[in-house]
Length: 116
Length: 115
Image: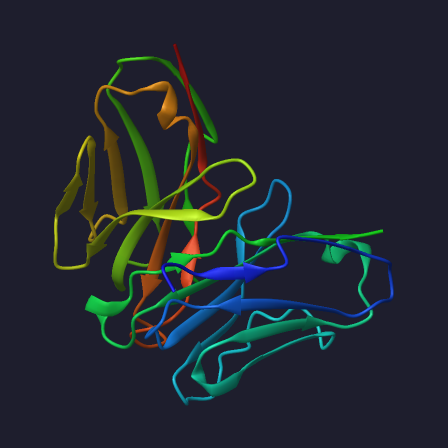
């Protein structure tokens, strides 16, 4: 596609429910990243996928958070038993691949998650 | 641990002024630095990417410089316009964890250009 696509754009969920957020990276991009942006805060790294390598999960805040990337393309971020502090904008980015010259990151429009 | 700082957090200038946005980072072992723009309620738009071997990059009215040894980058905006009003974020990609390591972001500078 022309850019990184995220869905839904907005999600309101009740505390305790599970949610799934989807990211379609730019076609041909092998690297995919998830970030979280809370009100008044900077961007917080969550997880990074690169090709077939094991993902870097070092930023996931708790075991309620998980992510997968199927077929090296689409990624889903799952939050189980949502809490109010999970409310934030979840941003996905992709980049072309390995090597310093191919690492310009392109971001989607984000999913605004509100837990009530 | 890499830390990225952007000061001030907010800036208001009259239209037409040339301005400089600053970014500093604590670990000079970086592959590159990227400047982004974020409009309210939107995602991030990539403005400029500077590789560690480069000193500056230009795109239209924007010029970004990089002094890796001192841990500093500046984004210069010439002849500012109200449409430039947005939050500007810088992010560095560190070398410590490989070529595609995560980006570490500053908290951004919210720019308001007054007509």
